[in-house]
Image (cartoon, rainbow, N blue to C red):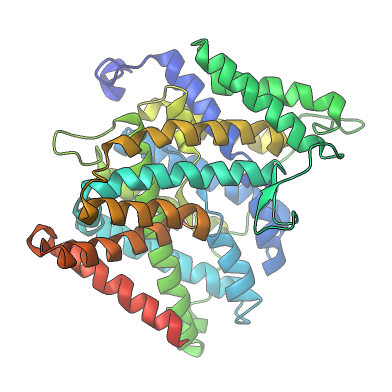
Length: 436
């Protein structure tokens, strides 16, 4: 185990990896409830999607562990599942089978691009300042996710977004604030597994507040439902060729840059980079993501992607694929213990996400803000991710801003060829969106 996962080399231990793997799982376990809820509106059965979510997450995360040796967990992604249901099926009138076909073909193309090193080349072309900005932007992004999930922040405050009135009956927000205080205290006292302990303690505290609910006749065991296997519609491609390519390329680009953004953020936070400053085993990591997408489509769920919540596990000490093995096992266990895992409320995982925002903010000190050609693109990247609620858009606008700033600053020679290509593609995508 030591030799395979390189524990000593990365300055970690088995116990740290286990705690990190559990923390990542608890931080992203909400997807087991959210994904079936969204995809069931497309016509897919709730129970089948639940099983597909857990199994595809376990497969993809295990592949990430064994191929890339990174503490990154994967599961069907938020945003992508919403596009699947509300845009493709309900908006365009396509069947969920055609949508799953697009996800399958996107995953197959990703496998080819990953094996050829194309996706890896894209990752390496992203400037160092943007990489650091991605980590900071993701930190703010998941902080907002935590604040909103816990009910601390809301748009119903008379402003665009603001803190709720804690004097009311918003018990979830109160419990989350208490949990955040506990997590900060435990971390400051150097208590091992402070983030995980914070989740557990907050869950218990939520019981008297009515935030953590234990139903009558509660039983921790359940029997997994059968997934919807190989529900594809290849014949429908010819009948919907125009719409299909729009669907295909939306899945393709959103998945690609969400994954790249997450990998950059986790690698920056956990110092999981090689001598050249690139993500360790990035080719294998991207291949794992592609394999997960193909597996998810075959099982009946939307695009599987790397989860930004993996950063909570890294913050808890995870540095290798051993943590991912733990997370993958827990997803399989969740198939049979789903009622137990569902006891953990969003108010209990929110403090972990908020606190990780602080940990990921540390990368901001490495950005050269005194150089406008570096600082402005970094600022655009950091600003866009939380406010656009999108990692991929943060990278998109950051790369475009980088090219513009370098050209304006008469430093165009510093722009890599692949970065030029990305900027052109992103700019063309913006024009296409504007003309639709």
